[in-house]
Amino acid sequence: MSIRRVALTAFVAAVCISQLCAAQQISVAAAADLQFAMQDIAARFQKETGKSVQVSYGSSGNFFQQLQNGAPFDMFFSANLDYPKKLEAAGLTEPGSYYQYARGKIVIWVPNDSKLDLSSGIQALLNPSIQKIAIANPQHAPYGQAAVAAMQKGDVYDKVKGKLVLGENISQTASFVVSGSADVGMVALSLALSPNMKDKGRYAEVPADEYPPIEQACVILSSSKNKETASQFLLFIKTAAIGEVLRSYGFDVPRSFTNNVKE
Image 1 (cartoon, rainbow, N blue to C red):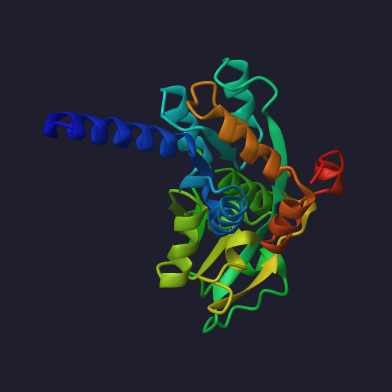
Image 2: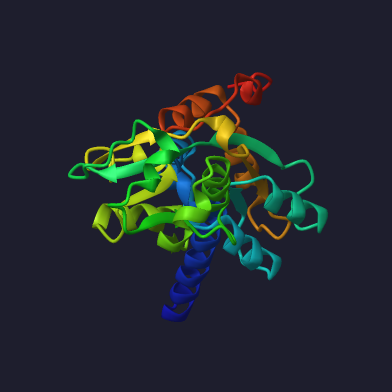
């Protein structure tokens, strides 16, 4: 066999392997509150199927804008229902792929060395010793919208809005408090329970009736080039086992979400 033919054969093999690998991997845009839960879920999926999930984390609103403009993701996991529904209405999602996977929860979090008493819940934010309160930007982050709603319901928002420090997403918001850039933060329970935060501070959960439900949903994008793997991952997300994983990371996953899905 000539050197040229050997080179051509190797090139064709490399292209085929590259295409096969691409088909075995999906790209996911996910809300920042899923950072640690999704790492666990993706690892389990790869172990079970041999297929990988590459995840980018950020605010749901920013991803929504990117996806409207053709960002090359296979799936979108939003921290609210509105953005996936709007993408669905615009014909940008795979029919029948919309799935409500969890409800998020918010907490008031402070570092271990803070003297702030959290027993009064939202009212603790009125403590005069507080200089900066971190929340996610309510313009595009569902957790920021929930934080504002909770403060408004507790009649503290107008009194503390001058102290608010806005994170681009809920993960950056949490980092503000962990780093000391803010005295207290309203963050996702899923992050408060994460390895990065669980031993560095303490939190008080904000009662669910003090803010609109943080209902979260995912979709497969119609532009996906890996719909088969994306569909397989969606079915994996729907299983009761993954529902338990999400619960372990602080999400509320009603049994009804997974009752009709076979393992």
